[in-house]
Image 1 (cartoon, one colour):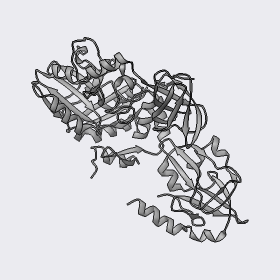
Image 2 (tube, one colour; image 1 turned 120 degrees about the vertical axis):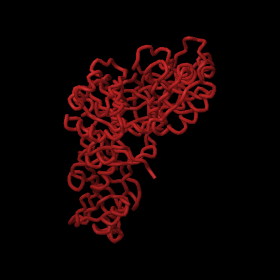
Image 3 (cartoon, rainbow over the protein chains, first blue to last red; image 1 turned 60 degrees about the vertical axis):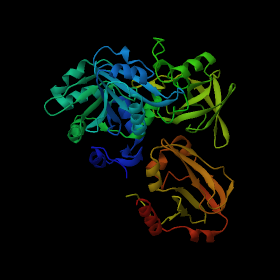
Image 4 (cartoon, rainbow over the protein chains, first blue to last red; image 1 turned 90 degrees about the horizontal axis):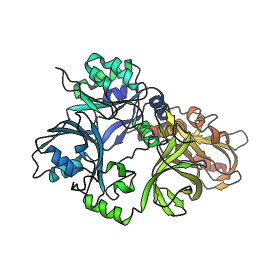
Length: 364
Length: 131
């Protein structure tokens, strides 16, 4: 039996085409995925991301625990509200999940993890938390709405009024609590589209009225389909597709998210990553643009002068009007390559991503 | 509810077939199929004069979301293809039974058409898939 978010009725009302996503009934689109994509790049769109898990970590041992648990270092967070993107690794350096962690205060951090990995994440975290003085609380009482696009912030303020005024001053990748007597509300300048905007965590009973207020302010409902093409254009990895427990961040374009300094910090997976760095990382994650006609898709074979690789995510880029992909290929490969599609080798180009951000194409 | 014109024939794999006055067949994908696939971004057309068996893969339609095979409804030879789909694949979304046609076929044996679904049977099929 699949689960429904507090916004399920709103999706039906907006004409959402519902599909199963990690055990949740979620809207893939509300009519046209491509129009929804452009709406976010050029104006403002909103996503129901209530299926994602919000976790609160509280207690005197929380900082030490997260410095052990995560490949990025929460000690870098010194200003309340500051957010950090990190991978959570196994002992082999493989990625159990990618997540965002917010520093709320010295004894409270908040984390948002993927819907499909929620159960295994919690089991892993609880196992690792033995010996640390903290509690882990799953906030199933909260819903989450991501409003993204160049006009997203203005329209959110128009819709939600004065009680979120504190969010106006947010720099990128910060969150702020704006709650009142009606309950807890957190507004964060984070997202998964390559556009400015907010992610709003709010009490589930207020989700539907907030969604309606955002529609009145001109924010259009946007489905998971457009969320996928937006994040792909922005060069953001999707867990389970671009990385998993069998690859490390160093092979996934995420070396920048691993805090190797200070050298004394013994996070889970560190020994494996140190060994991989010393031996040389054999693969890298790159962008591909298809020069021939067709559509790049996950698992297609990539043929380069330095050896074969594989596409991890591929689709059509509405912003570029071409097919694009992320691919894991030999570290020495560059320039032109070929992709095997239905038995034919088609011409493609290896590029640095992102492909598009802030309403603009980043590649010719 | 998707549009299912009564004068056409259909396959279980969601192609539509129009029998033209000269006995040739025009083939496309149904309104229901284009709705499921979503925004079309690429159509791989068969080659003219190529021959296919009934039920054989002969073209591919790709939406942003997924690639989907198009099956030849009955055995025959491709006599024309809709080259406009190369530059405007979205035509298959906007006008699936008109300008969104994919290819025309000279059937080997007109009797094979009897095995295709009529509009009523196809409507039942679509309704059954929704449950």
